[in-house]
Structure formats: C-alpha cells, structure tokens
Image (cartoon, rainbow, N blue to C red):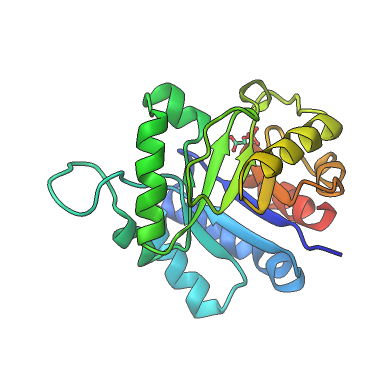
Length: 218
Ligand code: PGA
C-alpha cells in the first residue's frame, strides 16, 4: 500500500520554545511511523528545529512556508532558496493566504517555483481549484479549496478526488495532496482515495496529540 505524505503547515504560529516542545511531544509517533511527514514552521524556527532533528535523528523533514522570487541580494525581508536549503528540503508556494493577504500573483508563483528548483527544494504548490495555473517544475500540488481552510468544513473526499484526478490529467505533477479542515476523524477518507497522495494540515497540526492521531489514521 502506498504511504501517504503528511505535511504540517504551522502558518504564523509557534515560538521557538513551543516548537521544540511540540517536537519532543511528537518524538514517539515519528519514530514509530513509516509515513513521510514534513513540517513547515515559520522561518525563524527552521534553524533550531533542524538542529534538534539532526541531533536526535528524528524522521521528520522540514519545509519553508514561502520563498523569495529572487536570488540573494537587495530584497529586504525576503528569504531566498539557498538560505532555505541550509535547513529545509521542501517549500510551500502559493498558499491562498499568500495570494489573498500578500497579493501574490501567478507570475510571482512561477518565479518562486523556478527559485525552489534552482535550490533543489521540493516545491508544494497550493492550488485552489483544478483551473489554478500550475507552472513547469512543480513537484507536488496541494488542492485546498479556500472555503475549507480553517472552517471546520472539509471538501467531500469524492469531490477532492475528482479534482486531484483532473490535476494529474492536465499536469505532469505526480503527487496531489488535499488540504482544508483535515482532522484525525476525516484524514483516512482522503488518503484512501486513489488520486490523493496525502494531506496538508493547518490548524490540527499545532496540537501534538491531534497531529499524532492524524499520522496514525492517515
Ligand atoms: P486547515 O489549514 O487545516 O487549518 O484548514 C490548511 C491549510 O491552510 O494549509
């Protein structure tokens, strides 16, 4: 049976201390699972978490939540691919919150995908529907209907599977995740769908107990 990919997106939550406590609480679950788990914390936590993960040899990959569309240079506030690659191997691109609150355009998203590729980062592009533009070079797509994010109302697994199938038919992307109000209760229904390869979890990933249950039930 295929092992699902489970990606946690902490968004703008967690201090360094809280992040390290989460890691400690998750240790046992991560040691016991064969599922691939990726954590995307805020940039500020990447160095200390990656150090701790290496020290304790924890089975957990790290990802960034965003990437600069530029290389290094005079771009105040931006974190570039080379800098991310020092600590992480994945990167989320084009999350609907970035598109909405930071007015990210399809063009910028395309540049970000190119920068991720240059830095050898695995790009996870978040798309809001089957018609969202998927640039060349995207490694993984996460289908996240905007209304399902943080609302407690997930998409139906059948509907999500249809969108995932359509995405695979129109692009060369081999892996499609579902995201939007994923919980320990509904995760298995998504990961059992044939076109869905895993999940992207926001709110429920902040709580070690809930997230451990999600990993178990996926
Ligand atoms: P949610 O967020 O699980 O809190 O709905 C998912 C996401 O935005 O990635």
